[in-house]
Image 1 (cartoon, rainbow, N blue to C red):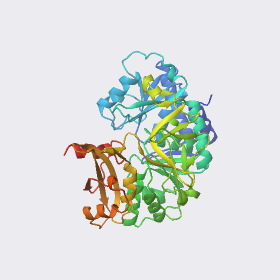
Image 2 (tube, rainbow, N blue to C red):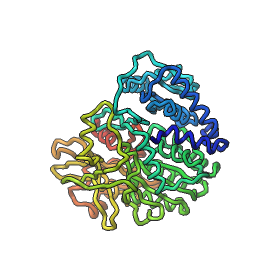
Image 3 (cartoon, rainbow, N blue to C red):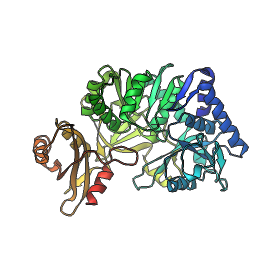
Image 4 (cartoon, rainbow, N blue to C red):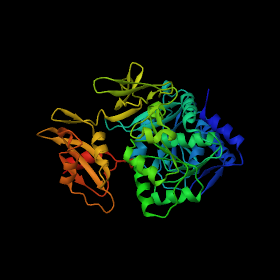
Length: 475
């Protein structure tokens, strides 16, 4: 059995004196990380935590947060990351929903929701032990993701499958023993989690930032001799913009992009900004333990605009009349916590339904064309938001673009496109539409164009079609 607590613990023993984690105020060696984790584990066991019991763990990209996660695993528990910035109601609902009766907060000096207060670093809540759930047997994590119904889904990830996926990921990203990895992705998300864990398993150092700020990232890339960083496209846009306005030296390390679609125009802009950097793009889902397709750095220029080819252990098919991308992998989730109906609905036979629509390009790489639930149905015509965005992003005056459908009495749904101009540009909306009319079929042209300083963002800080739809429908 490949318990993540044991695997990272072994790395801590091997690299005891080496720096493991650095945040904006503290540095931990591998030895100190293991000492802190074992203190958490002992306290959980003293308070009566059972094997495979869910435990809430406070995180906000602090060095000691990893000791909390590691301590839960070494005590035999299942870690449920909870961000310290969560509102009280959200945190209380998560505790109630999971049945967690233990909370871990290795930085009790920081502001946190009420349910976490008093954990120094472990506290027991006044509630009975939850009933045993077979789904949590030998589970490592429950990661909550946005659900199509508006209720977050708790994705249950098993130790052995997670550890196996880390090994498969490393075949294509090849983390070195002396990596210095800048992590601005949150530890509540699977992308940030695997970057941190893989760095530690290989003996590198993780430099954590509590929140993303483009100027702070550019400073850290140079100041801390960073060799690798992991970002999402929204961050890439900000970095490209800020780099053009600053005197920061170009980054020449390894850049991992993922979490949302990386438009070819943005990827090329990043390559121009950092010509000596290696740009790698990945696609995956929390449910599959992420990183199911990649565009390797040495193929990026040829693969731009696609999600590349499947990683080791991943099979795929494009199924159904709409062309849904479906994945089969041995590293799949156990299921959704306490939701057997959604767990069953997530699969077609043993193929996981991603909800993404895809096609195979002439070069054999897979490209996404939209989300099944985001496809705009305009007067019976199905329109992909991603296709619209890709066209408008090629306009020299457009920096960012986001498309969504919104209710419309005449057409069922009208097409709305929000555009953010490049610095100094003042695009004429009618002119933009005329320009696009030579590149898009008429039924795909936006019914309404919105010029804004920033794209509407969702709770995770990503550009959000739902936020655009709500903005439009609210008037």
